[in-house]
Image (cartoon, rainbow, N blue to C red; front, side, top):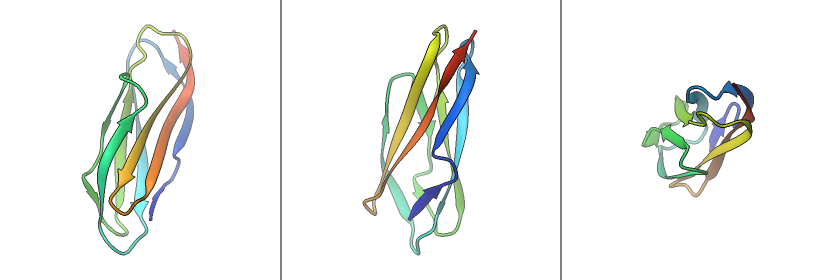
Length: 98
Protein backbone atom coordinates (compact mmCIF):
# COMPACT_ATOMS: atom_id res chain seq x y z
CA UNK A 1 0.00 0.00 0.00
CA UNK A 2 1.30 3.43 -0.99
CA UNK A 3 1.00 6.13 1.68
CA UNK A 4 1.88 9.84 1.40
CA UNK A 5 2.78 11.94 4.46
CA UNK A 6 0.70 14.91 3.32
CA UNK A 7 -1.35 14.31 0.16
CA UNK A 8 -3.03 17.75 0.30
CA UNK A 9 -1.13 21.00 0.77
CA UNK A 10 -2.68 24.43 1.33
CA UNK A 11 -0.27 27.29 0.70
CA UNK A 12 0.02 30.88 -0.47
CA UNK A 13 2.42 31.18 -3.40
CA UNK A 14 3.83 33.94 -5.59
CA UNK A 15 2.22 34.50 -8.98
CA UNK A 16 5.60 35.58 -10.35
CA UNK A 17 7.28 32.15 -10.64
CA UNK A 18 6.23 28.48 -10.77
CA UNK A 19 5.95 26.66 -7.42
CA UNK A 20 7.30 23.15 -6.83
CA UNK A 21 6.16 20.91 -3.99
CA UNK A 22 7.77 17.59 -3.05
CA UNK A 23 5.33 14.92 -1.82
CA UNK A 24 6.96 12.21 0.29
CA UNK A 25 5.61 8.68 0.16
CA UNK A 26 6.43 5.12 1.11
CA UNK A 27 5.39 1.71 -0.12
CA UNK A 28 4.14 -0.15 2.99
CA UNK A 29 3.51 -3.32 0.97
CA UNK A 30 5.72 -6.36 0.46
CA UNK A 31 6.42 -6.05 -3.27
CA UNK A 32 7.50 -3.45 -5.82
CA UNK A 33 4.74 -1.25 -7.23
CA UNK A 34 4.89 0.55 -10.59
CA UNK A 35 3.25 3.89 -11.37
CA UNK A 36 1.27 3.13 -14.51
CA UNK A 37 -0.38 6.52 -15.14
CA UNK A 38 -0.10 10.14 -13.99
CA UNK A 39 -3.11 12.39 -14.67
CA UNK A 40 -2.77 16.18 -14.33
CA UNK A 41 -5.68 18.46 -13.39
CA UNK A 42 -4.55 21.14 -15.86
CA UNK A 43 -1.81 22.12 -18.30
CA UNK A 44 -0.35 24.35 -15.56
CA UNK A 45 0.85 21.24 -13.72
CA UNK A 46 3.90 19.06 -14.36
CA UNK A 47 5.48 16.27 -12.36
CA UNK A 48 8.51 14.07 -11.85
CA UNK A 49 7.69 10.60 -10.53
CA UNK A 50 9.62 7.38 -10.06
CA UNK A 51 8.58 4.54 -12.35
CA UNK A 52 8.69 1.99 -9.54
CA UNK A 53 8.54 2.19 -5.73
CA UNK A 54 10.08 -0.42 -3.46
CA UNK A 55 8.78 -1.85 -0.17
CA UNK A 56 9.81 0.21 2.86
CA UNK A 57 11.82 2.67 0.77
CA UNK A 58 10.76 6.35 0.92
CA UNK A 59 10.22 8.06 -2.43
CA UNK A 60 9.30 11.52 -3.72
CA UNK A 61 6.88 12.94 -6.28
CA UNK A 62 7.67 16.45 -7.49
CA UNK A 63 4.73 18.59 -8.61
CA UNK A 64 5.23 21.99 -10.25
CA UNK A 65 2.34 24.44 -10.59
CA UNK A 66 2.77 27.39 -12.95
CA UNK A 67 0.17 30.09 -12.28
CA UNK A 68 2.43 32.95 -13.38
CA UNK A 69 0.50 36.21 -13.75
CA UNK A 70 -2.77 34.85 -12.34
CA UNK A 71 -4.51 35.99 -9.15
CA UNK A 72 -6.95 34.59 -6.63
CA UNK A 73 -7.32 31.07 -5.39
CA UNK A 74 -6.03 28.01 -7.21
CA UNK A 75 -6.15 24.24 -7.07
CA UNK A 76 -4.00 21.72 -8.90
CA UNK A 77 -3.69 17.97 -8.57
CA UNK A 78 -2.00 14.82 -9.79
CA UNK A 79 -3.71 11.45 -9.79
CA UNK A 80 -1.31 8.52 -9.66
CA UNK A 81 -2.42 5.06 -10.75
CA UNK A 82 -0.41 2.02 -9.62
CA UNK A 83 -0.20 -1.51 -11.00
CA UNK A 84 -1.61 -2.89 -7.72
CA UNK A 85 -4.94 -1.14 -8.46
CA UNK A 86 -4.36 1.69 -6.00
CA UNK A 87 -5.02 5.33 -6.94
CA UNK A 88 -3.67 8.33 -5.01
CA UNK A 89 -4.53 12.00 -5.55
CA UNK A 90 -1.97 14.67 -4.60
CA UNK A 91 -3.22 18.26 -4.32
CA UNK A 92 -1.80 21.75 -3.95
CA UNK A 93 -4.42 24.42 -3.17
CA UNK A 94 -4.15 27.98 -2.00
CA UNK A 95 -3.93 31.63 -2.86
CA UNK A 96 -1.78 33.41 -5.41
CA UNK A 97 0.08 36.46 -4.11
CA UNK A 98 1.54 39.21 -6.31
